[in-house]
Length: 504
Image (cartoon, rainbow, N blue to C red; front, side, top):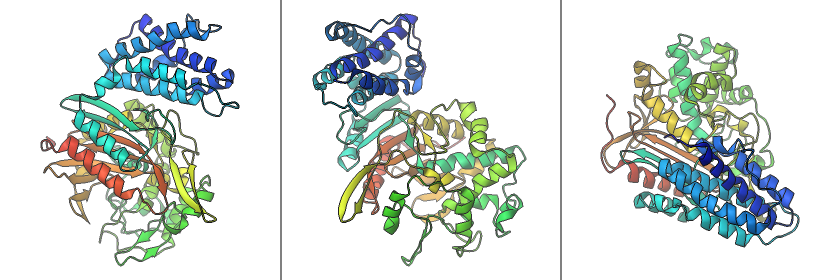
């Protein structure tokens, strides 16, 4: 996808965007605070539109104008901006609309005095819709219906990006925030949870390709300080066949639960909530796991364990002498220009984003808290990364298209190993799934307390489905069934019209 914009086009976009901020600021009782909040939302825009909005043109004169004069100039500019984007890149038109609506909502947030801004927000929304974004979304009624049903099932919001034989389709439903009116940004940032594992596995395999790591070498050769069982290989870490205890807790076949650290689910939800900004070192997560009995002998079974991927992270750092964030930038983020993808080192998440929530009981009272800011060090490289739907599409398409790994290692990555889960095997950092339509997709999914992400592709990288979801999570995982239904609904809509093509 590319945009060819003249200087005048870029000026129109910036006039529309910053003009919307000026209109909202003029309509509030605290114009400076409103303008500051809204401008932060604008300058955090991602994608191609974000690059245009990042540089405010000097020739845009919006200061000191009355509301009426501003409206006469800005509202037509909003319509024109959406139209010119829609002709070349409909996804960016939707991104622009979502960014403006997020700025409008930000202008109304945290004001000292209530102000009458609803009518101005309505006019801005109407001007955006007059540009035709809503019409573009109706071209895929099946996808539109699927994402609306996901919201109806209990999610606050969802945004979806599909690349297939019909081109790119991007859409969102629900809201970015409880009680808000703006849809989730179609290319906003989301905590991607266990999709992180696919990035980490790719890094390890790239080091294998560089000759720095042996895939079937003992992991203890690289991490002697932990006293790992010498039979555990690097492959077993990536494949979840090492048998090491999961530091976030184990649930055994007989229903017995062996707790690990405090996590947001089960009986430790309140404890996690109270300590959600605590920093865990990867080493202490591994040490906790290794202090517990192994689930099975190395190679004798399959069990999903976050510990495997924290060990993989430490292996990357030990072998290279650099942080996993630095290696991620060197080998994946930089080469693919994934500017919206982050290995976080604290609780912050770049904007724009849809908000994440957690519901818990405190002193007999149910509370719902915005937990968009949280320290993901408790899950570490088992699921700490942040990305966007565009970046996840670019990543999985490039990975399966052979741009990141040599063909033999990509084949190793996607070779299915039985998990015991029907129609779902595991490779090295990816699931290999049989769809209801008889095809095969390569995927990973991830949940990150109030955020979730889906990442699916045909084995050749030619057709992809990416979704970002935000919800009200809780210790009972009450959203889990809706999540699985949402996943299946979207996969069937995108991949079950025809069998996925096998890799050449």
